Length: 313
Image (cartoon, rainbow, N blue to C red; front, side, top):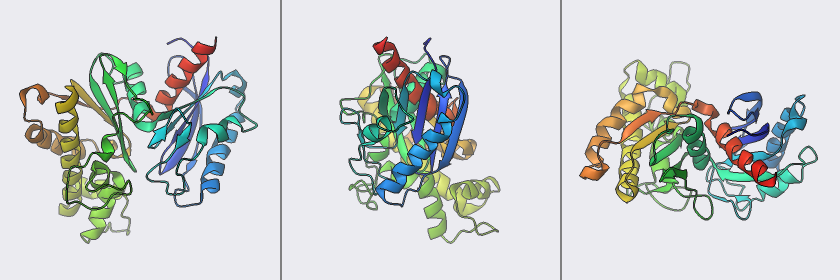
C-alpha cells in the first residue's frame, strides 16, 4: 500500500493518540494525551485538537496527504459524526467537521470506527493478514470490532458493522450505556474488569483498582482478579461464537489494553470459546493477539486515510 505520509488519530475513552504514518504502516511521530471522557463536548473536542496541534509541530507534518480518525463508536461515517458510548457528552458530534475546519488541518479527513480501524490494521500489517474471514477486536475501555469478510474489511453503511461490544450476551444483565442490557462491553471491557473487582471487595495493596492492577493481582493468583478475567473472557467467547455462527469466521484477532494481560485473558477465552462455538462450522477459530498492539487504531486510521489520498490523486 505505497502512499504518502498520512496523519492518524485514535480516539478512545481513555486516551487520544495521533501519529504520522508512512506507506509501510510505520509510525514516524506520535502525540498522546488522556481523554477527558466525563467533560463537556467542547472540552473533549479541544483535547482532540490539541493532540493534532502537538503532532502538527513535527517537521514532517507538511508531508501528510490526508488524515484518518479511528473513533470509539457508534460512528456515522457518512455524516462524519460520532457518539461514543464511553464519552457521554458526544452524541452525534460532528468530529470530521471540527477536525477538517481546524487551522492546522488542510487535508481530507476520513472517519472510521475503532473496531474497523483494528480490522484495517491487522488485515494490512498484522495477525489477520492471510485470512479471508476474520473478526478483529479491541478490548480496552470499551469493546469494539470490525469484520474482514471475503478478503476485505466490511464496515457497513454507517461504519459500525462488527461492533461486537454491543451484542447482548446476558438477557437479564446490567443496563449498558448504549441502552441495551448485558452487552459484551459491560462484562468484558477493562472498565468492567476493574468494576467487578471493586464490587467484590478487591483492592491492590496500594489501593489501585484499574484493570492493569487487577491483571497484576490475577498474575499473582488472587481469586477475585482471576474471576474478573474469567468473566470477561466468557462474555467475549459468547460474542465471538455468535459472530462466527452468523458469518463463519476463520480467525479472531484481539488487541487493546486488556489483551496486554496475555494468558490471563486468552487461556480462559479458549476454554469458553470451545463451549459456546458448538456448531461444527463455528469451531476451530484461530485466536490471535493483535500484532500491532495499542498502535493498531492509528495504523488502521492511517490505512483509511491512505485510500482517501490515493483516490484524490
